Image (cartoon, rainbow, N blue to C red; front, side):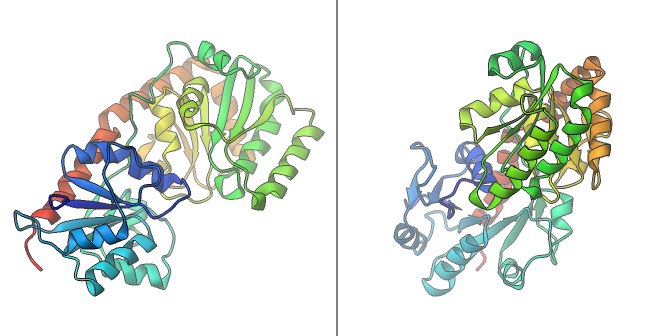
Length: 353
């Protein structure tokens, strides 16, 4: 444990997008920096983990080469864990925080960020909400071996077992913030014109969102489209790449978002995208090239873009091809891990107090 140079925060026992991002970069960073994770939930056996007691014991001792250990936090409570260790238990660490939120930060978050030794953000939009300038911008990346195009979209869709010849989907927790209502309203406008397409909504429905989903299902039933617009529920992680490969179009319509990985996962899978202006999406998508990005889209505007693509399978294919090329060039998980590791290593080598 004395050689551990990087401690990665892992405080949330509920799997989230932040958890997924942390897990996806771990192997690539571990190849470059000796690391351990504070907390064992969701962590593969190949990555060492620490309890808080072990973390404190390890970080009170200096590194053999004289540098400083780095604690990488992605949440408020992880910043607090690191600051307590540093200020009250004598941990010899530098603390780096990755900020993805696109909203005005609370006073507590602003205070905590002000105590950091370094700040990483994932896009310029998130950087604009920070009082201090971030040290570096490192966009999220996608595992292009896990997410890759299907040889044939029609076959890939058929293998999923849903009706129709083609699929269009929206994935994530099923709630208003994710724009699921916009997707359903747009589908209701356009479904009858394109009988070969089936619309799927994949993701967990929490008890607090049950009424919201019930209302959407009632609208679908009144339109007689319950076999064309499907809620498929929370999907196993190993099925997600199959879904991204199988759908011809992915919709990502969040009203607000941190970064938002689903469009990149879709693009890596050779799938055209229709997005709102949330997250990093306006910085990633070249309008009309890999898909479309719309600020505050209405159901009518979304339906128009759906109609444009559904009417032109060749356009869908070209956009999917361009999306894959863009991800390969600029948004791979290895690229993200390499950039993060290089930046974090500068703090490890820093011998200043």
